Length: 550
Image 1: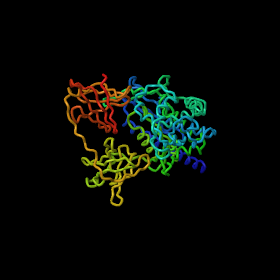
Image 2: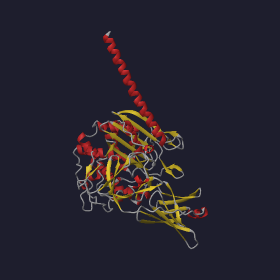
Image 3: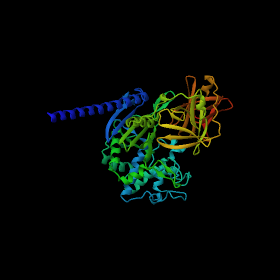
Image 4: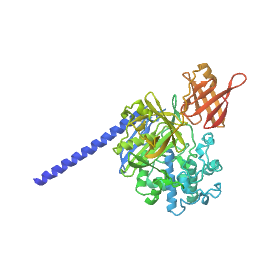
């Protein structure tokens, strides 16, 4: 009888434990459901989210629409363009070739691309992998938008940027750079004798069992492809066409949340590369000056409320993505969205924080501070060449990076403020009587020192009659294939550049308009008959004229 009584106690204990685990899982599911539902509605582009613990899925759902025109809801089966998460696959392919003895990450790229013009500099594979090469990123060149629809071979693509001036000496600075990964893809082809697409298929997709992953194509049929969208001031539209030969090894892979969990599990199990190789990829790297940077090879080192992360995001025409892995907790969160709008990185970061029991504070948790307490931190701060202005209006503090928009920040304490979402934090303090602030994004901190500089003046808007606004309607060609289309809706005037979302224009005088989403101006010019015939876009110190063509 004692034995039976002992067994019954053990059984009851197991049942209680199972009930507790079940209730905790149910509570997490409810938390995530509620959180994502606040971000995505059923009549808008959506998101596919998966959360795994110890390599096993504990949450997986879709929200919103995979196709707005057919009203198809997002489901785990849907395939999304993953954008720059592709860089992880490219980095692992390079490390596989290193393990095979075909290269060293310290090799100069001219060993494999002898005719590449390095302008007297030594550029290594390491510099390409961690974005320290100094090569011009082709996606920052105006020609990228004008040629977005054009199929190119890797060598044709390389020809577009190889003769551009170097931005800095290799190894001295970090500057996120898609050109580096284009070169890496070409090196993979040179050494393997396969196309990049075939190498990834045979050496990674097939080996890991990623049966619903593809080297992307706008021509081939992709089962369960989620359609990509962009957001405008007046609603959603189909994303602009982008030939997926252009993102290439920097961003052309398509996948599902299930397949990306297989990928993460293969990485964690050292199925594709040795642990020693992975360590180089996930532990950040160092500049030639000795300064540490969080980017390694295809992974960014971060932190969620004290828990280490390795992660990467992706953004491409019509899609935004983010994947986060927490090594200690063995938690993986992947989010794939079919809109190049919103902040999927913030969403996956918040879900990861919930999953490990370390949720971020919310703006609703903000405390009330006096105007004197808030005013203490007002002023300009310089962060390694970037200036941010803290301003106060109607008892609300705002932060604005020069050239960007004004964003609210919310006090959690008298010195700690969060942005909406909670994963970006300001910690203010004084040092030797000077204002200081530490900004933390994904656990990576940068310090801003208080400087004496006035904030950008608020520009006054001038109300123009709708009949005047209609005079600016038309298409203006900045260069072949790149236009700005001006339209008027509901007595407001809008502009839309090729491949970009619609933005509202604000008049400060007749024929002179400014934008609020970015620091830019549009000036219109008239002919002798007082008809608008051209415009000039002023942005980033550049003047870009455009003739009216329609």
